[in-house]
Image (tube, rainbow, N blue to C red; front, side):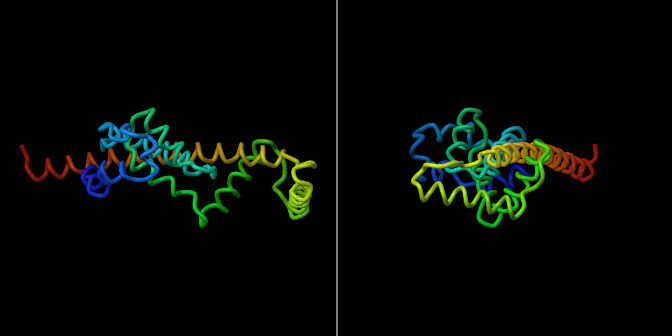
Length: 182
């Protein structure tokens, strides 16, 4: 049931291969393993897509495609999850990532005075064309928190997908068994 739903929803290999970004990877995107819809491929695709999709880094779709080509998992599902970080979700993603980072490094959450100090450092750095001091300790806290957040969300979505897929298969088996008793 889940397999048929996904196959009807996913674009064809020709549609994805004709995308401008995908032409960078040549014939590698036509690999049939990248289009299989099965439990293992979809679960791994959800893990990779949600991990890189939650990291607000430039060109995260390229990282997703590289990981998909390396692991040979479902390409469209992974790319669809690249849209997890968008202008509407970016602030909560950054806030939760910073919260995780503060818990890991055991520091207090950022307050208005700290934020104004960082903004002053950035403005000063820009005004002096790259000369000056920027405190990168906040960046370390944020980056660590974002990686932990992305990893936790990816693991949870992987497990949820496994459980829901298995539940769907068992439900289909029970329906079939009760419909046609032996």
